[in-house]
Image 1 (cartoon, rainbow, N blue to C red):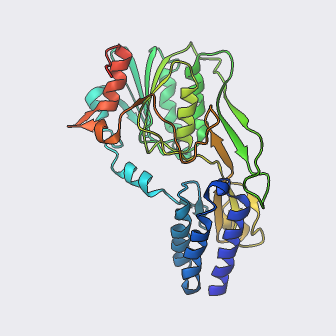
Image 2: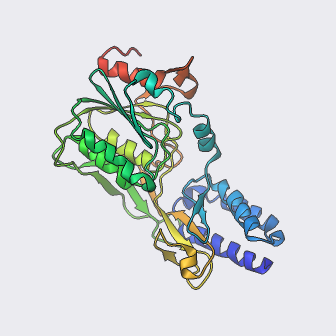
Image 3: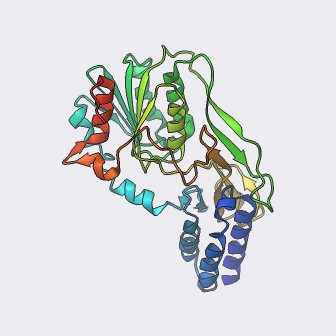
Length: 336
């Protein structure tokens, strides 16, 4: 049995070396990951212990898009500790503060919708594919009648980008596509520094939109993955303002690779369950490197807001200073 786990470990490290998109910027971490594995792998005597060891070792890469996949297809992501702590301590995630400012809020998780004066408030806590039907509540407000919009994604750790892009597209109000980010891919399994040219990603206008809106997006440390892409989409719309804290700096479009079975080492459809291929393990790895519009790397840097309000100053005496700033900015009363 130990030999089987050693074989899994070797397959995992081989896939990381050949396919991990951010390896060039994290090559100094790879020896530490290997050392963690090799210090304990010979003592692993069960699948649960291997899973725990793999998560502990891979977490050294500090990348939430790496995941160990169980037989049923569940990917246990290597959640960055700082993001996990920020989410657990995030005072806005449970919605208590929303109704204080937006008393007529409608709620259908993961969405909160409400208005204050002439301002439309939309909070999205997740782009989870399983909650796709809950996004139907937005159709009640398309087209957005309010010109002033606040979109709160401070508690949004990502999900399916396909749920996010239509919202940004609807708000753009432009006839032409806007570049909101760039991506690059590895071109060599042996050299992680060899990459494709910068490939632009476009925000395509929604033909049903009734014009440009004044958008303010609330962001923070928990804003990551597809929520970060959404923040980039919004920020590409001229006039949009971002308020809050720097985002997490993680976005990588993970791909799935088999660790055992007939297809060991092969890339498979991302929704593939290992047991469908008579296997037990798979590995999710980021496939691209994402860059902001200025072509600076998103990974490790995040998106810096136009108006920075540090976490320690964002919730003061039960008051949401980030949301207050957004409301005041729309009303023209905000003072720096």
